[in-house]
Image 1 (tube, rainbow, N blue to C red):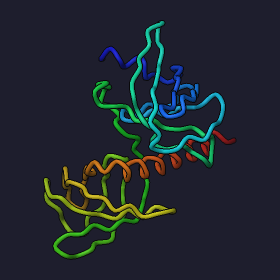
Image 2 (cartoon, one colour; image 1 turned 45 degrees about the vertical axis):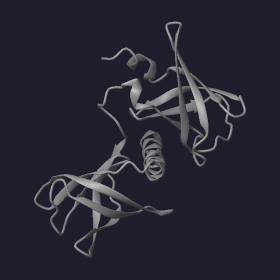
Image 3 (spheres, rainbow, N blue to C red; image 1 turned 45 degrees about the horizontal axis):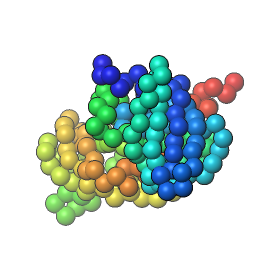
Length: 198
């Protein structure tokens, strides 16, 4: 376990300072997905995606401070927001992204053909999906993911293939990855609320 890991534990207190306005927001970590930290603010304040911030986390009177940016803010549910964790902080790679078993309509293109299919599970880093037309490990493809509010077109590399399915890793198109992460986070939160409601 690396020395920074304890800083990112759920419940850790966080200070987020807007680099441009010097405004500070306080809150706590409610989820750690390795590449992303989800923060529950003490008081709701609108924060723009892409906003550059300085993050301070204190554990045992030792601060960890790093520059980051806001990936997204959940405007619909509980106003939590998400910050990006730079790779040089060397978090464990166990959970890089939140992964959900969710069925989304998608299209992938191969040899000039468009094949419509469904996802089996998906994260902001990649997905596992049904493949009516077989793919090859290492192959680059382009695909469209149809979310309720928009369509994300993104490139991906095939990691593994099975009989009627394949897993891919998305290319690092961060704006699109953040859009997908925001959608998946909202779905996860809705599911958790449903499970907790008697």
